[in-house]
Length: 90
Image 1 (cartoon, rainbow, N blue to C red):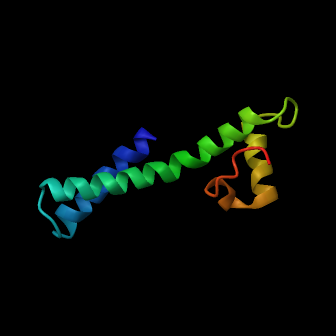
Image 2 (image 1 turned 90 degrees about the vertical axis):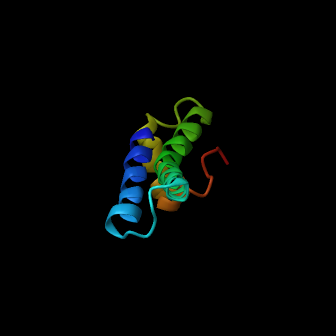
């Protein structure tokens, strides 16, 4: 999560200030970069957290491991299942 946050913060800030010259290197640029970085980090970390929660809340023997849990979620409900909040047992 930290890697996604740091990389996206730097990329957003570089794009706003250096490449596009849309903003100066002051607090509005840092605020917008931090907001974008937080969004990117959440998009990366949320699927992992949903799989972890579903795997931990499942009965013993339902899944062979976290990867099996993720594969089952994708096959049953599709890729968007990681963002819809289907991480708990129905």
